[in-house]
Length: 97
Image 1 (cartoon, helix red, strand yellow):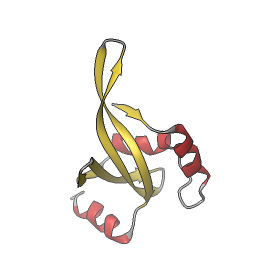
Image 2 (spheres, rainbow, N blue to C red):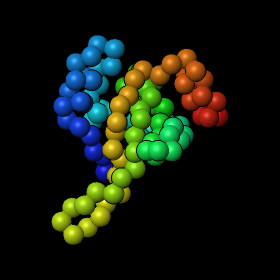
Image 3 (cartoon, rainbow, N blue to C red):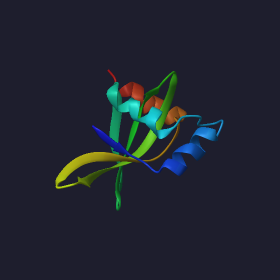
Image 4 (cartoon, one colour):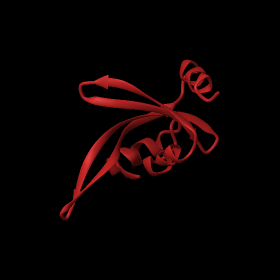
């Protein structure tokens, strides 16, 4: 899966002690069990809840088409993330059964 993000925002989030991950690290969430649901219709955004290292995080993302040379690749644009709330942790646990 192809991932895209804003490098400046990634560095800023990584420096924040309450977040402390880069978007590259957060993208690893998608290779492990995770829960995805629609967040917004306009713009169409989704949220995923899953583990990054030993922290449960919630990430907001969009599916996008990326153009490289003459080909199109569907990928994921990471918008933001945070440590999951208690409610999000429950939603994740309910959907992992």
